[in-house]
Length: 386
Figure (cartoon, helix red, strand yellow):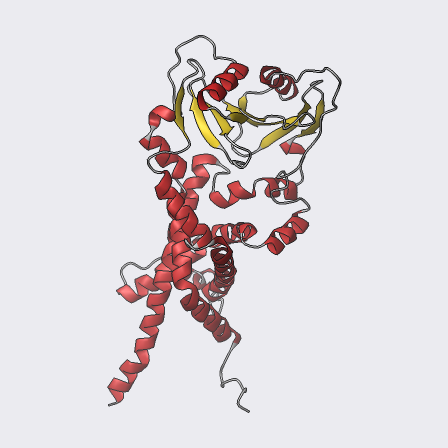
């Protein structure tokens, strides 16, 4: 008898209760995660604005210095080992070299090098690095220890997905009587009182950003839970972050010398005959191979890269993967990070993501205000009766 549902307790009320209490319970965490994600969206653009000399060089010669010379000079200057080099077809872009100074330093440091003078003009660390790292850690771990913060953010993201779906259900009109039934949920009535405006900001803006918020949440969970990443990989038919740890070996020949990076660039351009950014991961060890990724400058999708793996001795292409030939699932899996960050279509998608993240940041605030306003209603009714 005690578990009997109150009279009039409908499915819609059940959904409203889920949406309300999950939103109230996770509001602060979701606000911090969304706020930090919003701020992090334009990290690269802010860094370029603060240090423009590091990201653009003057053309001072007819031809650029070869990649091999850039590597040799940078290794001599830094005392480290170049593990990766990125070369742009844009004559005003510097070369980017990843340098590791110890075996423990797997990530290394990025150095920006003038391709005409061989001079190092900057590193990956700048005046805004600590600022953005602070918000990165907040977004991923809430500034806590990773083992504690990661699952908290993950669970909150799962709740956010439930809130997004239940919010869409609540957005739908109770009774559909043609197109007019949907109009209130499509526009904000700024002429109404502030409570109605706040409600519309939550309801209408939440609807317009529904898809992107869901995409951000679903993609973000790959960094929180291994089980989720494995499940996503099974659904897509391709391993998310699948290239990590993969190794294709070169055929070792007695007395054979490893090809130069310049030769690898030439082989890559013959295999992928178009202009674009080339990123070469140097062969690791005597049995390693060169892994090269190239992006067509004419592509609207900035993350649609083709890949070739080249034997370091013979120059034979051991593997060739064209983005256009991949399945939809494979394309999504290989672009998961870009999809989550909004980098996938360059500035176009970044602006849309920024606006959507900003709205997502506001939703916990407007939602709590709606809840507080509803709590006050019974008190007003009691006061009126007295």
